[in-house]
Image: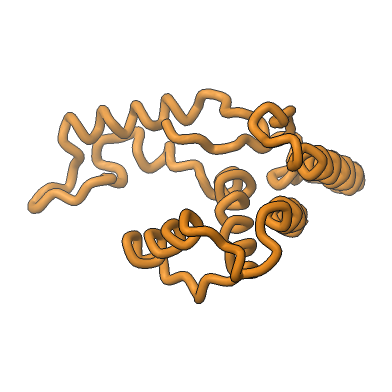
Length: 170
C-alpha cells in the first residue's frame, strides 16, 4: 500500500514535467545511463513507466524498506561481528573500520526528516498540489494502518507513513 501511494505521487510529479518518453531530457537520460552502466544496476529500457517504477522503488527503499530491514546494529557493535570491509587474512575489523562502523550506527540513530512533513519549500509552484496530495494520501494510509492495528493483538506499524523517515546521506 505504501509503495502504491508513492507510485501515484511519482506518476503525478513526473507527469508535470514529462508527458511521454520522448520528452525525457538529457539529465534524465544521463542519470539512467549512469545508474544502469556506471553502477551496473541492470535497469530496463528507459521509458516513462520504467522511470516512474525506478523512482518509486528508490523512494520506497529509502523509507519503508529501510525501516523494515535497515537495522544493522547487531552486526556491527562487536569487532568480530560482520565486517563491512573485506581484509585478506582477517576475521576481525581493524580499528579504523570498527570506528567507522560505530560512527555510522551513531549517525543513523539521529532522527531524519519525517516522510510526513511540509516539504513544499523544496518544490516549484506547479508541483505543490502534487506534494500536498501525496501528504494527504500518506495521512489516509497512516489512519488506515492505525485503524487496522486496533484489532490486532500485536501492533505492526512498520509501514505507517507517520513513523517513517526520509533517509538522507550522512
